[in-house]
Image (cartoon, rainbow, N blue to C red; front, side):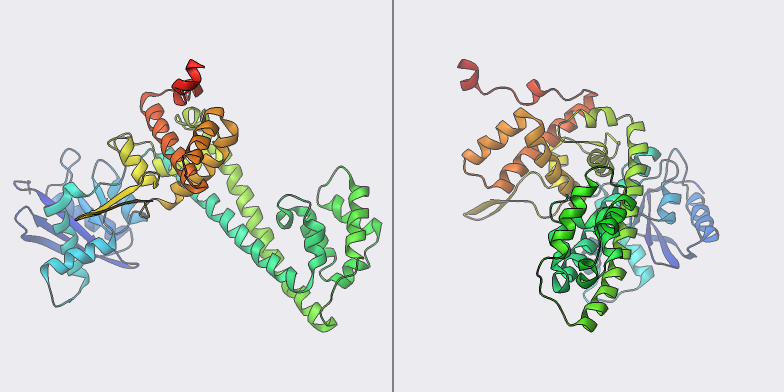
Length: 414
């Protein structure tokens, strides 16, 4: 059938089945279906949309409470706009039509369709990112999660070693990322308890270091480790110490798996990110390398129509402050509702830019001299640099230090 009126689709998403509702611009329910989460269910959904006039030139907009999964991938094929509605927002819309707090899956699908009918202008469709950008987003987010997981397990291992094996923490302290290094893993496997570590010979220590891939300073390092392990340390009872050693080996196995996952994903990001057209612009900014640059691209995407201006991007990243005003009271605070991944990447970006860019360092110092705390000054720097990134990506220009951070008038006069 043709489309004489505007039609909107709402889908209540679930793990195994989904409820679909179609309404017209007057709010009349045109059709409802219960489909399965498989190829047959997806075909039934697409046939239903086509029956009510869904075409490449005039697609039916769809509202759903998730932005991920095969169902969303099927719906995004072509030019169909897909709106990911926050479940909390959908619950508020439900309360507008019923005070009894009743709830059903078909009713939720109808609520989602009516959200688009009445307030589609207040919601934004999923960005039209390229396949390469979406693939980089998958890898960058997975690598970020793996890095966080690795650090969490390393903290668990550190806490466990403090209970019975402080000699190991003292031995690994001079190494950067000590507990995550291969040398630390080999030594803990060779001596899971302090009693066994004290009995390690120089030759055994050297073999463990070589097995971990160390090439230089092996003899001197083995002597240092032997001295630390044979120092006077407090001990748990022997049986308790052996049990804690077995627990430590189990946690160590998790840490090794998490470290390998993080390293493999980092390598995948290094291979994929430079192939993107925006990589050259992103990497021209001080403080951004392949890993951090890929995280920024993953959250920004490459759909240039996603943000109307730089202010929208700054608010999305949580870099710009938010004003709360009511009556005679007004306050300006940091923004709590934001993209947490992009905000975390921005924190690392600004921290690195302070040492990589003279202009960024001068900007940070001016904010500190004006009374900002470290976090506020760094957030202000991120706010400025992400605005510059928006401008450079939009105009296909590389970062320019002199243009980004021009000298203050006082310094120019001097």
